[in-house]
Each structure stands twice: as structure tokens, then as C-alpha cells.
Image (cartoon, rainbow, N blue to C red; front, side, top):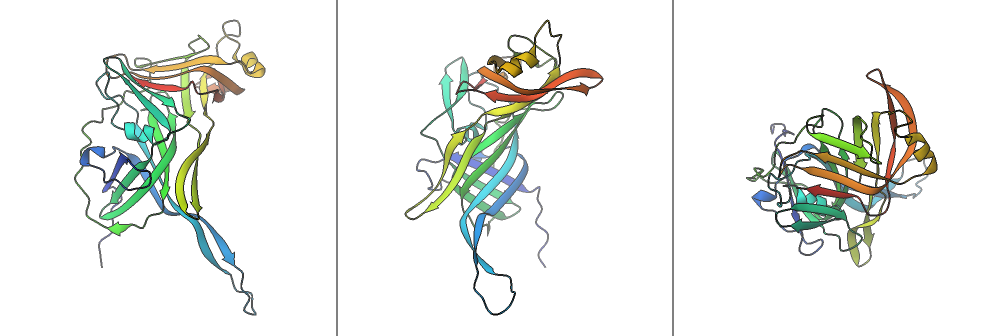
Length: 305
């Protein structure tokens, strides 16, 4: 009997494709330093075959639109060099974000409307290899107080069949240790006020669709609705009336700046942010305000400096 396959003996590699859907072998430096990997090699639906045989048998079915889905998380940290993309840059680009490098200044990711790049993903778990081609995805970013900031990715690709294959040698040395979300490392503003932040989630909100058509199979991004949620200590109404701004649908400037030294700074910004809904609640015995976020338009940006 073969020994059990050990889950932790896993690898993830991701490379930008030159031709969408044509698998491009990742190199060792395309490896991802990941957490919480799940692989769904058979996603999709099925159609019944309601043939009658004179009894109450359960119908057979035929799978349709079969594709593959992968989920994993990555720590959010800059590259250590002011104008060098982070080690996970390919993953951001595979989620419909455009990359702009300004020498000696920054690397910025914006929301693209077209010309979306695709990924070849190669995944190993202790000698089982799974490959996805033409993959595109979406992610959430979680930034709760006193935790490491995380990017939680979901990628959809063309169907794949896992095979036996030895794990490859990889290099994740470009990944940097993240800074904890806290007073020393992080500042947060909403509408020019800086309330004490307890929790923040940003949801890129891509609609990723697999299409299995006659003469065509692809995975495309068809829509995006960026949102999220936030919880912070409620300020006096005379300082900032967030509840009224939520009631009125006001659009506010939002920013989260993380890190203070060159090469470690991570910044989320949006000039047109709405606070959608608001609930007052208890947090550590302090009155806190919790609500949804809507990042209107395409002004949400992620910058590494």
C-alpha cells in the first residue's frame, strides 16, 4: 500500500502566459509562498439524463462546463526595493490589475478594463501535480489589527487532470516578511479623519467566468464591483459624522498606509469611497462603527514604494 500523500508537501508556481490558454512552464522563481491551498480540479455543473427504465432509479448525469478552481493566500509585503514589484506580482496581474513601474519611486497596480493577462498555474502536493492554463482570478485583502495583512486569491482555469509527478525545486527568497497591522506600522484615513482601525477587508470583486463554447474555451473577467468592510472606533459626531455620510451616500477619500521605510511601504488608496450601512457595536468595551465599503469607479490603487 502506498504511503499517505502529505498535504504540507506542496508547491504553487504562477507565470504570466504569452498566449492565453497555452500553458507556459513556470520557472523556479515563479514559485509562490502560500498558505491554505485548496484545489478543485472538477468544478462546473451537470445535466441529467432522465431516461426511464420502468423504475424509480436515480438518473445518470453528464458533466458540463468542467473547469478547475484554486484558492490560496499570500502575505502582503513589499519587495524590499522601492521600484521592484512584489514577489507575487504575477498574481495581481492575473486578477485584472495593470502594473506601472516608476524608476526610483514606486510600483503601482490599477484596475484594468481590458487586455487582461492570464496565468499558467502549476501546483504540487507530495508528488501529485495539477496544472491550470488560461487562469484568471480575484482576491480579497484582509487587514485586521495585530495580524499580518493577507491576500486571499481565487483562480479559475481550464479543466485539468492531476498526475503523478515529483515535486520540483523552487525559490521563494524574493518574498519578504510582512509587517503586522498595528500602531507602529499602519495609518488609516477616511474622509480626512483618522479613526482607530480594528478591521479592514478589501474585495476586488471580479466576476470570473469560464466559458465552454463550440470553437472556444476561455476564462474571462466580465465585471468588477470593488467593495469591502471596515470596523473602527467611532469618533464624536462633531468630529466626523460617518453615519450621516453613509445615509447620504457621500463619496470620501480612503487610504491605508502600511510601513514607513523605503522598499517596505504598501498603500491602498481610493478617492471615491462610500460607507454603505453602519452599525454601532462593542469592541473591547469601546463604541465602534462597522460598515461596508464601496470603491466607486476605477480609482482603487495598490502601491508599493
